[in-house]
Image 1: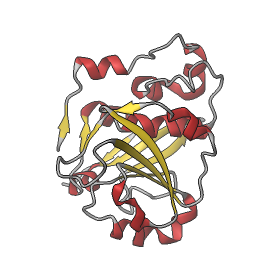
Image 2: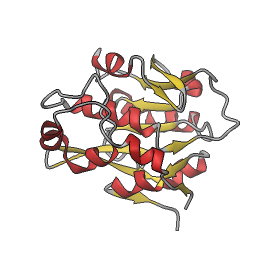
Image 3: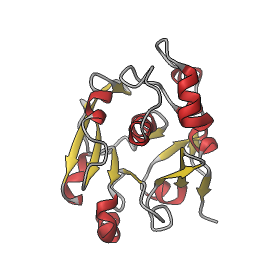
Image 4: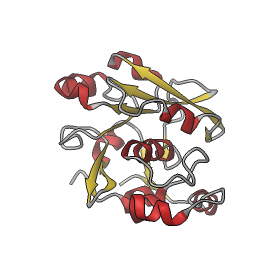
Length: 202
């Protein structure tokens, strides 16, 4: 299993950087998100966050707990989070990540209409509107070193890397580690600890 340990600096980023209403976050999204989430200024203090505000925050923070190959052919100046298909996030996503950075790169949100446009993405959220095309999408991105994420049913079983699920009104996630590793991605041990399940090769 390829994982990297979380440094003291990483642990510091797990704390809310501004004065937040922590009680609202606890009741709204539960322990898993508190462990993982960097509460971004645009979300901090809102009570309660919506389902897709929580998922947007997860997508942003996944970027802090995944390592991409050094030879990945993407922009050197930006960290690209992309949405393929019908966008369920609305305008909130863009305002949430505006001015933020990951690993010293400005975070950009891109909305895509076809999988072939995703080769410049670090993280790709595949909308449920693309469910009938999922097999072709994942085939097109095979070995592309793009972290694929979705909330469509059976996503990780079909080869996707991270699937959002809802348990007791809380947004959680499953990981297909085998798929991530096959695409050259290294997932943090901390990220795997808060996943509700991790699929590994035998």
